[in-house]
Length: 473
Ligand code: HEM
Image 1: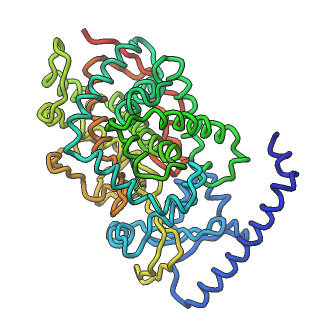
Image 2 (image 1 turned 90 degrees about the vertical axis):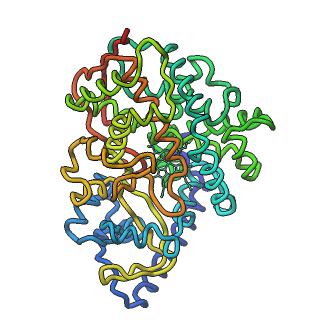
Image 3 (image 1 turned 30 degrees about the horizontal axis):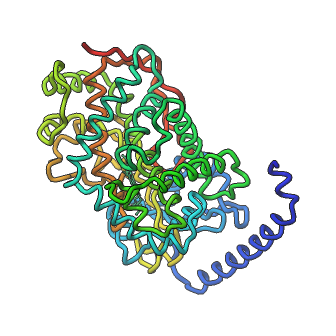
């Protein structure tokens, strides 16, 4: 059945009409409430189409549109889009004070409807279990548990690279996916749990389904799935994989999947598994991609990476990535932090629950509060020459104290900051070091641009990227 058939089906039309009327009523009511406040609201860009607001212009170039309106309206502004007021804070002093403080904002209220669409999790379940899940993930992936994961991942990455045996012209994104999917899934969810990963055909199928799911994720969180049939089918495929996987979880295993199963309601355990899978791969893969691509594209950085690897790792012995070795490979960490900075998520989001005053404006409760790490990382006060890929800017950070540069917000902030960040940094440190240790690599052709159409997560490349890989002997 295609979309047109769905639309003439009365079972679909009636709820749509009722939903639309209800939504219209809520909008009028909210507008009246805001007028009654008589507050000095931030300047608002609402376009000329009632209710749709500036959705059409925004949708054409979302990332660039944020900057354009920021330049027009100043550091605090609101975009009115399909009935939602989205208020952006663009100055560090403002987002540190309000976005990152749970007194004024709420994470769950901002995202529960997106989660419902993304993974078929009811708002009731999400509101009940979200904090426990966050704390569980944070605990399981805390820095004191990383050495264990580091040993396991080093082994898994090494074996997987030997299995794939890349040589000659390789599409970088696909290669990284083929390495990262099975290794991260095995490390976080268990070797046998998602057993479909074990042969090459199943890994490729999983990759294709995940790419479809990830590619349209942003739309899938907002648009009814009858309009995104391929995306919905990939989602159901992945959900079924988790439903089977959850049944295989053994009572004595120590994986994140096992802890997730123990934390949430049985009905939704596979659904939370899918969300966790997305969170653990959707950003890490493009970051690995941009790190390798940008290093290869910047000769002076590439030379330095090769010399740091040569000085630290002995070609005749398989490397072990202990804390001391990673400390010596500090420059590699600078490289991928710089890749994260320059390709950071387009937006992160909260809901205002307590009105606050900023720059003389009142931001009312009910607004979605928006922060753009992508644009925050182009603030010249914190990041001079912001468009330059310049890993040296990170050298002054003391990584043994888990420092980031001031103004860096790629992992969000406050109570619900990314709970997988230390795991992500460890996994990237090992993978990137291993690749430059095992291969001589160079770019074949041009470096792709980043896709500026997506706001959720790290930007993807807008085209394929070929590199030449030669095993080092
Ligand atoms: C470089 C890679 C990564 C980046 C840039 C990144 C970034 C983010 C950001 C911006 C958020 C939202 C935080 C907020 O709104 O304040 C987030 C949430 C999250 N991240 Fe990451 N992340 C990365 C890797 C990972 C990895 C490897 C994992 C797991 C192993 C992970 C697990 C999560 C989870 C579970 C959440 C949701 C937290 C919640 O709902 O409370 N992330 N991440």
